[in-house]
Image (cartoon, rainbow, N blue to C red; front, top):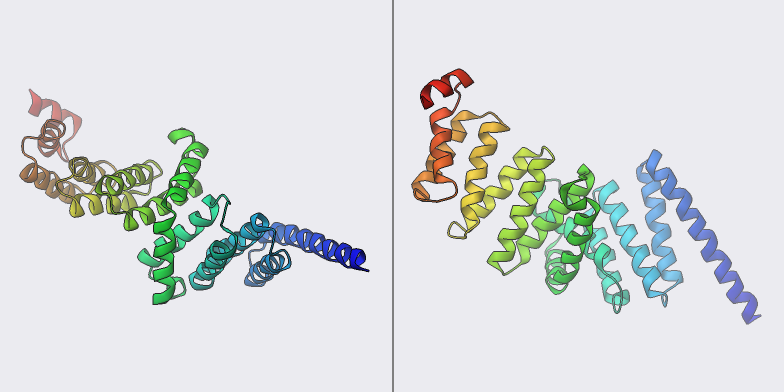
Amino acid sequence: LLALGCWGCDSTSEQMKESAKALEARLVTTPTKAVCDSLTTLYRDLAKANPEDHAASLGYLTRAAEVQFIYNSDAAPSARWLFDALSHHAEGQNLTETISVLAQIWNSNNYKAAASAKMGPDDIDNTRLYLQKNQVWMDSALVRLDKKMQGGLNVEKPVARKFIEIAEAYASITDSPDKYADLLMKAAGLAKNTGEFNKSLQLYFKLSNRLPDHPQAKTALFMQGFIYENDLHDLNKAKTTYEEFLRKYPNDPDYADDAKIALQTLGKSPEEMLKSFK
């Protein structure tokens, strides 16, 4: 009887896994709330049905949280399912994907205005605590995403956006100025390369404004002027930014001359530029 009972449990779990596969396929073509809710419920039930299989349960709860967050834009339950996964199934497991989703939720809560993305104070405190304890897994997530983009040679926007969100979340909880600057510079450069110019400006500004004396702040400020001039074609803001750069860093060996030339040539045609140089 015991053997038959165990076989029945295994059979039920396999049926649930097959149902999950079918729902995942439906999610691609029909991402309705009903499909999302069915899938998240099924993954959570699978985790409950296999509490001693920590690797599998971690994966089920992580995917449930990801679906709930991405498709239902509901951060609070997503975060709590991840807390459950990290509390009961994290030991000895690879937490790259779990921490990636938690970092994206944290970033969304920090920078998006949607009410559904907001979390309560306890959820916010727990999210920060888990991210601070697991910074190594955010590093792992960024390395994995960078490899997927082949170091910038093959950049897909969804992958780039995920990298940017995790990097920005990581920057918001690190105590290291160098780490903060490095994360924002990488994220800002990637945003620019994928045409997310306003996001790139925002990230460069955060760095130059928060750490004006950091060695990378000069590059961040110059890049703001460059984006205003060449990508957004806002010459007034480009002029203001280049002037600000020269006030702050008049003798900078890397960008001061470039900023001066940019100010001389803003808005001029190639013929006018050639004439001014002559």
